Image 1 (spheres, rainbow, N blue to C red):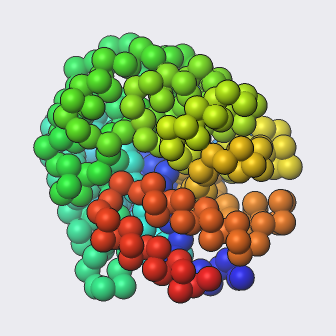
Image 2 (cartoon, one colour; image 1 turned 135 degrees about the horizontal axis):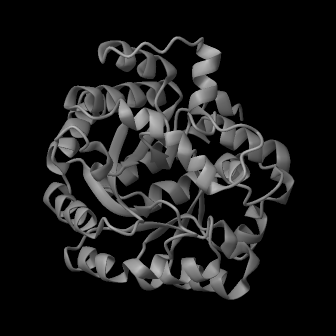
Length: 336
């Protein structure tokens, strides 16, 4: 199977602000009167992590510049439109794009206005034609010390827009600095409002973060790679039917592993944990979904059987309607 020719790919873990196409950044800067005064190569360097990235905290600094460009409704609509257009061209049939509305209110927009702008970009591409890409929006609450009210608003906005573009809530940010269990009350509120939940855990922190996410009602876990080093945690994930959103290149960038041969994906698979393959941040990590699959296929000799399995897991774990899940699975079956 030629991965580059697949048209049934799924990306469940994709950050909007970390995945802006280069041309989008240039156009936004021009529209907002910002003179970049740099070559495309220099701009790419500004937006992407170096090979020597030290950890997640350094990785997160690459979001600062794109966020300055994403503070108006027009900019947000364009960002979503351009990203989905690019993904559609890469053979992605379904994706869930996540962002934190509270990070886009610097020029006076409310979180609701932020969400409406991104939804406008989504509906300009997704589902326009029968063969169009399908997409959902995940709203991220952010780890931090003084943003409790903003996080509560994010959860309430997720409930308001649920089923109308928005499909879930997430917890993102500096995991090692702000432990997952600190947000138990927030996600109890999300559960009360019947909002599906995915939580970043087991990336910069250990298995205690993963277990906390499970206790808080996560149906999926972003990254969760450190579960592979603990049999009890893997059994917990299997017991609760929780799917992991693995992001190999990103995990290399943040030094979860030192080289791809160390990536413990086989341990998870052998333990019966459902895993999916995702990009996390296409621009920050300089990757795409085809690259992620090719990297794993080349490293671990994965073939059609494993790739089909990853895609089926993604279709099954997607926060979408049963009709769309069946559509995704049908295309996967037809392709393989």
